[in-house]
Amino acid sequence: MRYLATVFLVIAANAFAQSPTTITTPPLATPPPGPQLQPPKVAATINDAAWLQGYWVGEGMGGVGEDNWMPPSKGVMLGTFRLTKSDGSKEFYELLGIEEFEGSLRIVVKHFNIDWVGWEEKDVSYKFRLTKLTTDEMVFGALAFQRTAPDTFVFRLTMRQKEGPPKVETITFRKKPL
Image (cartoon, rainbow, N blue to C red; front, side, top):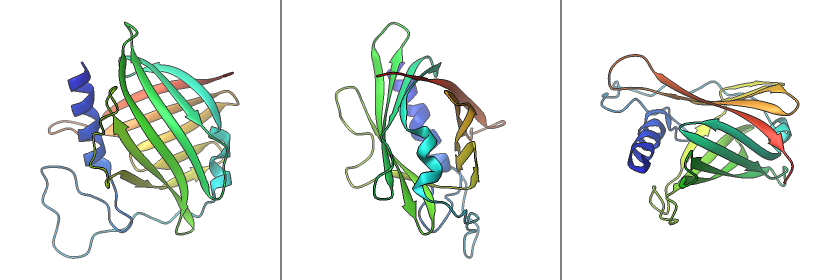
């Protein structure tokens, strides 16, 4: 299961990762010649993400996810994610940051096995630019955070598949006291 989750998230991240200047084409595809299209720039500050602050728990991806977000400070919100399988064993961890970037926001993600071995090289992280912003929703490419109530948000991860339509993983998080 850990292997499948690792492969699953690495494929998802590779399929939708963005550099600061280009959108990455899906794996197994050849980029078209010429300049790459830029995602539309969405004006935002870190205060637009402040509603995400807190400790959140939800079920999905074969277990229980826990998301922790610190309050905004100096243009950044730091977060952690932990997935625990239904049998109680840990699956993987993430360190995350939502940061102000070029007049907008981006999310930065690094993954770790339960023994704290990083999935990415030490100088590599996945960066997703903000592509949509409303009062209750932030979309960073394939990653979406949608607030459905003051104490609830839905996280969606959309992944391209080798064949067939994209796959969507969803976790509904509820705010909990620490």
